[in-house]
Image (cartoon, rainbow, N blue to C red):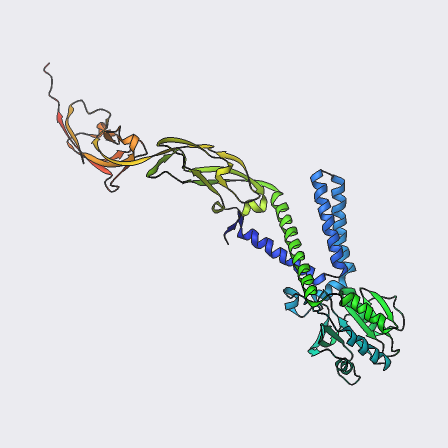
Length: 476
């Protein structure tokens, strides 16, 4: 991935991973009180950030304390709902499963079957999941995937059927699971005639948005439970009306679109929240760092060549959050100077924020140097004579009668404007004090100015042959 709009792949992975975690929390806890409290904590967190930005010290302190207490309340008050999600044995549904949309269910078949079982005092427990999945809440159960019919329901809850004590899960026009064990409610204010089936129905309704129908085996009464609300049903039309209102309003196509749209909006909100949190952290806890970044010259003119620059790198003093500064490497910073408008000769180029590429969240405090002098010209080749350079003095009784360099000329490459005015190259200084007799010295060529270079890089040494003789003594 490299970089995306200046953001490193580590940041993209960080945002994506935490967005998915937040989205999974929404999927697992939607329809429960845990999610509502978490949403309230998010609102408090936003208010705290606003208070921080406005400098409201006491308000910030109070909100911070409320958020800490709310986190503790969630763990204590909603521990049953949290544990039921965390204790699921189905890892697929926990980490990446998405609840399927509840297709339109033939409510008439369910109502007719339920009243038939009530008349015969056959105990039954029927679950109709809506938006929130049941995988993380229920336990055991046998996959069934049978076509929904009155005969099928009656046979499932027949007394001699091994699965009649568990719940039957209906999705669309199919019975998907039977013999399902539901979590029991912890409420202490329930009527004394409520048995295990009623407590199981309430336990599921407290943790999901499912509709649960209970048929009492002892009294032959029908009860509908949803969101901790208990409806005693005395008429078939009332039961059908409640079922249609809560689970049968949408056509399959419209309901599926609504279900998909809800999950898409939730995912988008999670992405926005995590990205905002990342930006908030990236701008906080400011720290400084210095980086030396090589300069890159772009868009030189045709046949133009860069011969020299007053600096090869730029020192940047950068500011940003500690995590961003620590993860910032030289490979994520670039300094590019445009030579499109350069002319032959020395050009002065400014180094500004527009010429520097940085990741988001990083700001520039200082640029050194703030401008460069760059020599740009058409390249040419020329042969120049080589002249030895002598420094110091010979011994008083010696005189140099001859000195020559081999090679006598060398080819050099450099800017057109510079080489047109040059005719001679000089060697590095040779000390006369070290000479006592004729001989040969090896010398380097002094490439001055620095914008020129030898055409043959291998021929960088010059042999200087010299002849010295004794001075004739002057008669006294």
